[in-house]
Length: 274
Image (cartoon, rainbow, N blue to C red; front, side):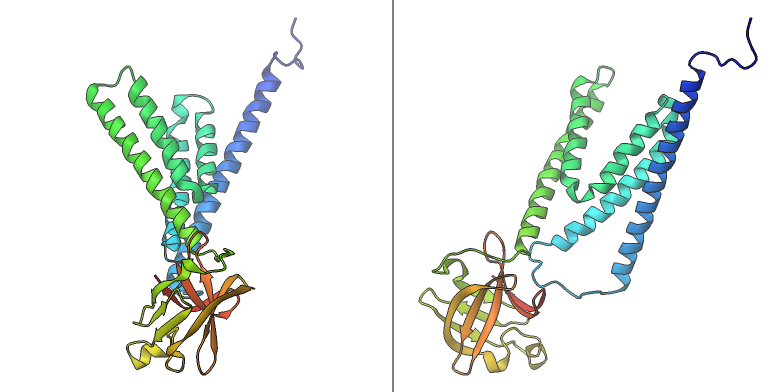
């Protein structure tokens, strides 16, 4: 004989499980929505307001890599929200797992080449093991997996080279062979560093550009150069003219790619590239 206060076996546990799923779904959905809103706000502000001006040390396009990362994060968030509405019919909890994976993709958007590789691996596995897929579907999946793998490699190289180009050069090479060569600026200025320790500097090609040139008119000419101890962010290249000296910070963690004249320790006023 059943008592009116009795609870069917498992009913309480199932109710708690459903409540936990609803709570997790709400939190994951709110996280995706807030992340998308913040990213779009940041992208809009970056487009409307020039907070710091151009970055002369960005020789590898790292700023554009970060832009792609932000767009990838927005895409992952949108995919999570949309997919969560389309997947419940595939089974209990499928939308929850989808939301969790997409939120993780949003958080780790800076590593988007690895995410592209993971997607390519899933597509490639489906192309190999898909029993019901026809020959054309398998061929398309195989091409998609290959394209994803190539995009992943290209993106990884882009991110690594772009990032290292912006890092200070801290090599202890006393001879400074890595900086020997001709460096050029955006306004036509040049700096030729010879292996014997001499240099020749030329000014910008126009008077207007010369005001923002690394080798301004009173610094053009010849002299001797040397690498000094680390000052501020990295190794310093000191140019000694007849009328004085000029100190340039060397950037490029693996190999020097930028000579920067800083107006503050963390800002580059103008730069030369090779």
